[in-house]
Image (cartoon, rainbow, N blue to C red; front, top):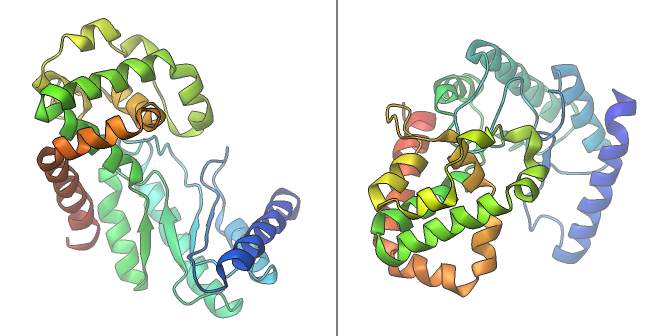
Length: 271
């Protein structure tokens, strides 16, 4: 375990001290993420990592381990939910122990990366954080980005045109866009519709393919994952993309808000 993790912890210490020099200690939230690795960390490994972080003087407030199963971008969990719940509770127990034993911050919490849209896990997560009376961080940036694109498409006109352009660009650059996320996406290229087909879609067709609704036969998880990693296409549009968000603000805001509150916050925290 030491051979596997201690060098990485030392590097994390260098990064933390660099940021602390520039921003000042206590003026930022420190998270350590281990999720995009090949194998999940066992509870003893997580305990060693936390002890080492304490030795390095890193006041970690969140830690994101890798769990067993697939946490693919923007789609539901693939794996044994019961096994996840067991691992999640074991990690919560390790954190509770480490906070007391190694003088780590009292608000140290578990972070679930690629946690958006993992609907099958939200009840087990809710039970765990209630059992341990602890905080939780679920990373949802990706689902918000996808809801922006859904809002654009739903608005039609300029918004739909931008959404189609993003898909066309992402499809053309698929290999480069997907390469950094190989451990957290699972795309069947043969099931990605050609750009020429998508160009002919109306707003309803585009939204149906992209929105995470397993009951809708038109939902395409391959298209959704590709657009998830296709944010760079929108970023290169610059002001043109931002202006489209303003034009379609009502539709974008409605989709983003409903998705985060109704499909994430409520099942995670409000039963």
